[in-house]
Length: 214
Image (cartoon, rainbow, N blue to C red; front, side, top):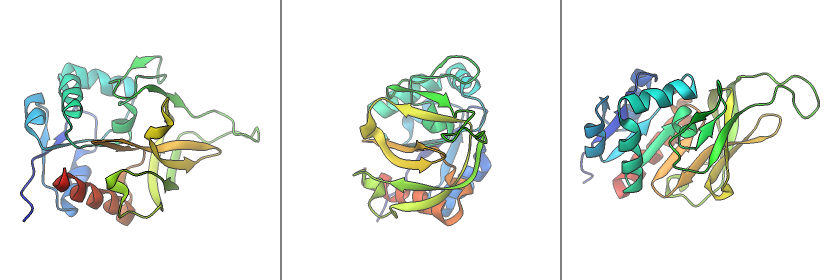
């Protein structure tokens, strides 16, 4: 029988935590919403959602001493799931509202979508709405998921990993961008699973199954 896991949902003052907690519960995961880094350190797995601006989110994480706890948890192998900013903040820096330093778990940066597409026509930014993600990779969380699925996005910035091996999800928005990254105990997506109906539930179901095996 699967044991009950302690899953920490990180509250740093900038996230749609209620809808995320409900979505996780629908996939069988009870979470503890926490603003205490010690609770995070004691957790079996970590979920970091995010809405808003990169610089403000990172500043809030650091003010609550979550940055050290998150990096420590990832380093020792705790399963981590990030949504939107929860993906972007894994990288070294972002150019949103000036240069801002991220957590530096992965090498790379976060850049704004260009104002004009490849054809020269204006590109609508932010990228809002449903779009297809093409998954490709050997990460165990992907084992029972469709190779292609549609998810809900709301973002103006995109991650630019230095290591292409991190990229396990790609999406086209007048050019390909990274929509999911994974490495060992880390899995993070640019889209919002909690807003993506059945497709989002498939991701959360896969996370629930994966953390039981970790």
